[in-house]
Length: 131
Image 1 (cartoon, rainbow, N blue to C red):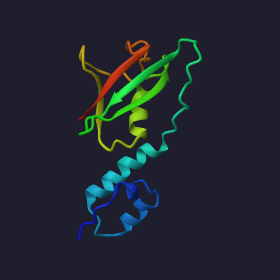
Image 2: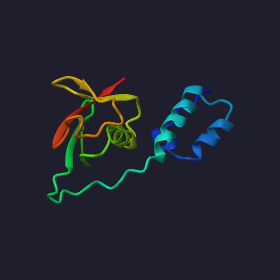
Image 3: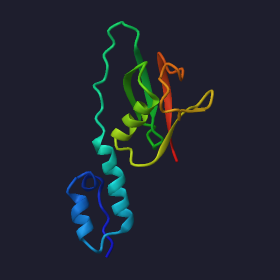
Image 4: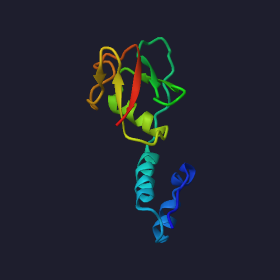
């Protein structure tokens, strides 16, 4: 018997233990639980407020779903590219992804560069591309 787990159960910290005890659990489900629970430990810093000190970067993330969902969040220009990945992972997108710019085409993968160094200041639109 293979058990299919719903997303809300995957995010329950007690689910992993109970699933490991059940010998009939699908191995892929366990891998998915482990992967999703890695991201639960992220602690996002509060969203910065624009107080006219010219440090805010406004980012729109476009999710490739049937609705072309858009997430918006403010960051500081000295935040790292890694903080963008953490934000998207924090939203429990549920798959591996790259952050890209459409034109000119660019993959944001230099995790230690600041948003300003990558040319994202003062605002940008970033596409989430499923790997």
